[in-house]
Length: 222
Ligand code: AMP
Image (cartoon, rainbow, N blue to C red):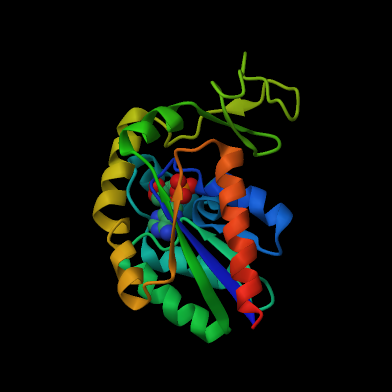
């Protein structure tokens, strides 16, 4: 039976960074609805243009569309880390039925706890390489002249929605629509939630999740 994890947390809490690292160590692949939507935008279709304007406003893209992306990209043969989905109670309920229909077992929900004031600086420091698509924190990685440490070219860009105005909207949407999902999962099963201190350094968070995940996978065998 395939397995799933959900990464829940504010924008900039490091869910994507950790999901990308974990898929190199564990037999899980990252499903980032944000990445899937940005891929659609990059194709320049009329749908992509509409998605772009919603993303840049900081609001949530239409449920049907995001759910359709999941249907196309998730199958019963892989284990998944859901990064950025669900983002509302409606999506959480959709995911319940969807996982059931695919015979995928939800193992845990990792909640990335972070001080909201801290995420604004973190997101404003974020740049993404147009070539390798890796993310870097310009302060942490001491980036100069937008040179990507991985590609060694001046290929680092700012995401269209990583500006202060949009970030504040994204945080508001998170607090109003996404944060209540925590209660939904707590009420369903009090053991499903694992709190992670997302203020820690990347390697510390990675170690923390890895240790938890190894235990969870071991317990799941029996
Ligand atoms: P992210 O890359 O997860 O920060 O997502 C960037 C943007 O994509 C969000 O601010 C939303 O506009 C959109 N988005 C990502 N995931 C979802 C989702 N599950 N439901 C609706 N919109 C989403």
